[in-house]
Image 1 (tube, rainbow, N blue to C red):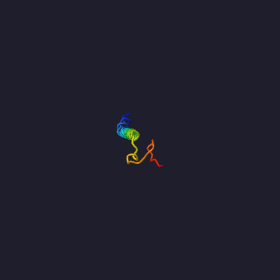
Image 2: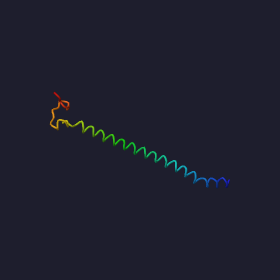
Image 3: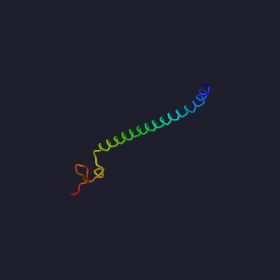
Image 4: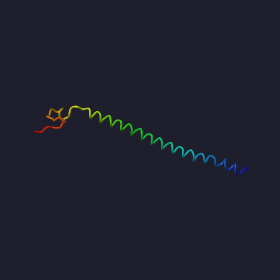
Length: 78
């Protein structure tokens, strides 16, 4: 019985090290996934904000140059 107890005491640090490595790998994977989701969310929010800013422009760049444009802001050719 003492031999088994000694074997268990000897193997315990190795078992715990393997368990700790698995936990650290899972933690690293979860943190990378979280960073990916956070950056994707921020990127989408910035993109939507830029689209809204472009949609709010009332004056066409062609009209700003002093050229004749139609009601859609396209260059008018007669």
